[in-house]
Image (tube, rainbow, N blue to C red; front, side):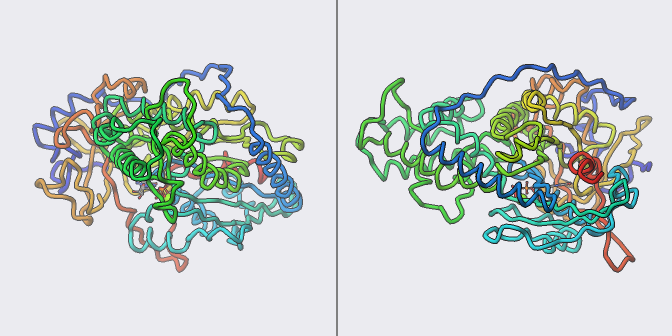
Length: 548
Ligand SMILES: Nc1nc2c(ncn2[C@@H]2O[C@H](COP(=O)(O)OP(=O)(O)OP(=O)(O)O)[C@@H](O)[C@H]2O)c(=O)[nH]1
Ligand SMILES: [Mg+2]
């Protein structure tokens, strides 16, 4: 689709109208547009992964292991009579988990356009239907409400505050003609919870040291100032002191929250419940913080150090272990969603942070080839799909590059998983496509742009038309720029793409707007089908082999 400059609302985020001088400057900054989509990925060297540091097994760890095995045995019995895939939709906060689950279930039950999902495209899937979920103590995923919000209100679902679950049963015909069913169990949870998994392998002393070190980094240090000032007044060896613990936990939480601001978009922010406490708000299990500890020392009884350590361990027992045991350890397949665009917006530090957070989380997966024996004792994740979400914010000519960046971001973790025998793939997708593409004519140039309706609350530190915020109704065309050919540029910040954290809000090159879900018209009584990008490729990889 070609449109000319007179199109109302032709903006570049952070830069105003396409005709302005500022835009010309930005354009010159961009690497030249790619003429071909063929990009050769450097293969990931089959490195022998380093074993993550593990603490010695305590008695409670052994009991926990026994419990996990017993649970696996029960699940295995179930799966034997009723083939089931427990699909883990994993991702940090705002990565797109709830939207993806909604779109995936909608597409399968409503009859979406999935040409790459072979059993669906060839008509071997007779129907997919929702059934009561297996775990009575877990709330049901509010699927119907999420669909209404997306399609009728054209709003994205709210951030998830609790775990929920949904069961989808797929009736299909095998290649040999036999009729079968496959059960797909999907769990949704707040992304913040994921940050806690790496704590299971860390002592209080380790976590405290790492958190302090991180908080002294360039971008984080100014945000940690108030907490650091208070920390300097504490002595870990002094007697335990509730007011001091309360203040430390509050200031530490303020610091974590500031790091999450979209300008910095930091990912490595454990403990997750500090950001989303739910019904644990104010409990001792959430009232602790890192301390400056003497190297190699031991916590004296009754000291502030011992108190913080006790509470940290309580947090792991009450919050982290049950989530790992009841949800994470039972997964068969994983789709790991990554919002790389939010990290691009913020800058190279955010990308490094994202990389480190993902590596820590992926260390917690039980990965490996699924065999009869391994299934019997503990389920193993035998396929992992890494997905860069919200690809509809980029012109399709940049999707290959987005995949390349994701490949680079998860390279270590992916190599480890492949080494353990799991199958890995990487894809750039949009669970719900909120934009269309257009070639915008600018002088003699054609810019590969996208059209969509920015949400009204998107003030874009780059404002909308005439310096105003967007009205939530007007469709605009944006040229988000091309991603660099070499993903490394995004990590070093040497290219044009510096991100919000490198400049004041007004000057930063901020490229990705928040678009509203698409306007859908349908004469069909069953309602419209949600448009997507490569959701079918994701399905084919995740469950195609189980529907042969
Ligand atoms: N354009 C576009 N935006 C998306 C898409 N998926 C998610 N988003 C945006 O990302 C935001 C977060 O999506 P969610 O699905 O709520 O993310 P989540 O991972 O469930 O987040 P938490 O519940 O906070 O852990 C949404 O509010 C949308 O603004 C997509 O496919 N396309
Ligand atoms: Mg959610």
